[in-house]
Image (cartoon, rainbow, N blue to C red; front, side, top):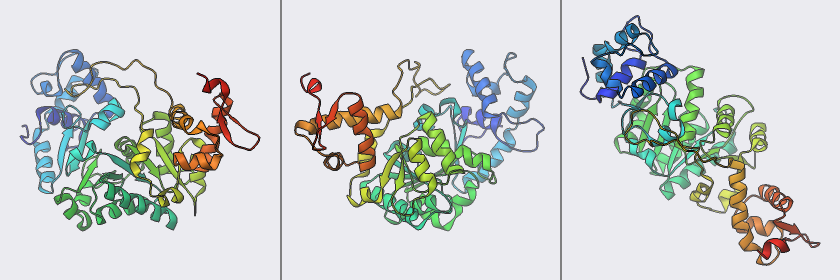
Length: 396
């Protein structure tokens, strides 16, 4: 039995990976689903073709696939139940699946997403704000100010709806009439029905989505996996508070390795050890002083980079060519951008503080990049402690 509210591909995908009914067959893991998807793709087939026939040479036992696919009644009941509270389902095989996840996470993205609200919100400019559950007062205030500024600029706030920084950012944005994407690791159905969010969802200002079934209970693995969707959903990510271990730290470190989004970490008052450690790991600096200067959040978007693209199976929106060009690391990109902006300002020598002010950067980060530019022979420091372009560079 198929469900008319889902595309045929979404139905097949949900049946393969979802937990429905009491069947003995174990749902496919994401890795197993990717193997099946690749095999189907090579045969010129889509997930919905499994309703007609299960190929004999799939990498997963045909009997297991057939058993999972046959759970249509259980799926229909689940989808009807979710639909009553406004939850919908989209699969990686559907064109509506968020392009950010498809491009950045590729086969690492969940085969099925559950959501309530307007998915197109993820196509707008976004800033993701994350942080510890046990946040400092300064961290909470910072997250709220970022969210309020985002609402004023028409930028969507992305966060994880966890107690502390995440929820503070979401509620601050909504209170100022802004738009929010909340990515939850459990209990989506409960969140959708909560009093604090019902009106915002109905008003088109809140999208709640999850990579796990709407009735799933919390576990640490799901919470850790949620991090990848937070970072992939943000044009930039701002870490307000972090310990040296835990979900916020792990998410920031994984993002550094994967280069999903440029990430900034708060400095200033009540700064935790984790914040300073993340700064040393390579996150960019953002402080209360930066906010006080009323710089637009869009100025942070210049740091946005994309990992090389590769095709994702089935969707008509995906690229069919694997990107071959090697990209710069985030650190090299930021430094190159700094130099590009710096040199036109050095028609006359400037001291470090003047350069930081003109480029709207923190002093500490400016010093690091100035010293690096000097080591590369682009600029030099005068006896008056002013920076100038080296003669060889000026003459080019």
